[in-house]
Length: 125
Image (cartoon, rainbow, N blue to C red; front, top):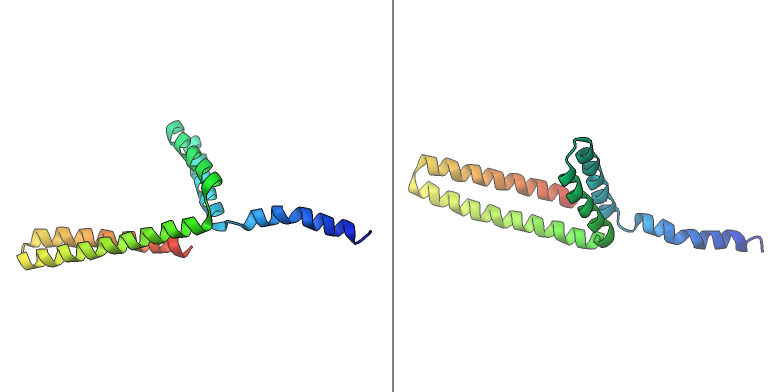
């Protein structure tokens, strides 16, 4: 009987323990949104806070780490596609020999590279 009580307590606590760590990526995303929400309220941005509150509700209700990883992976792939397009645009501009066009296309490529870097950083965390 003495052994039964601790076992029952452990069994009762298991769902709570599992729930806490079931989606750590989603938990981190929710914490980030909560931080933004607090800042929005502190700065008096009621409309922004309303949108963030809705986003937080959505994360809490629908987020799973597996789905979030797929979403982040898709974001990385999209950024890579964008880089390929920007590289092709730059090559085309280089063939034209127009320095302004080359500079503009290089700036767009640099921006796409930065977007990829950010997307990969998100994906790795």
